[in-house]
Length: 112
Image 1 (cartoon, rainbow, N blue to C red):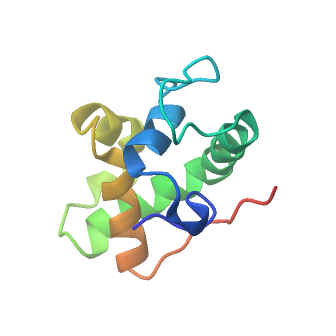
Image 2: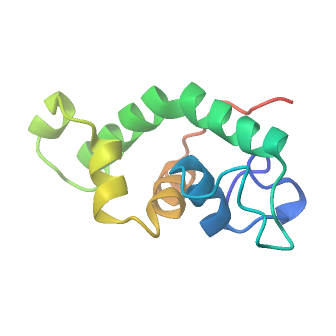
Image 3: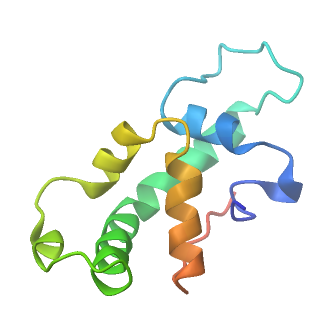
């Protein structure tokens, strides 16, 4: 389940939101009845930019503390978020947020 700031009233599915964040869906794509407005897309991008470093840190911490990865993961200089996005292009957002929220972490909300 995605946070309310990304899916107010659960109007948009995860594929639409991750498509916007991956620049697959843009303001010129109006081929869907549930097409998000430009303001909504901008809010999602702002939320993601605001939380990118937090997501990166939380995912490294979760990998080390809960999933049993070695300490090298904490010192990993490449983007773990980028690696997850490239290895799970259809489910990266859902997977990351599930791990974050189920481990008791949270992210900054976005405001209009």
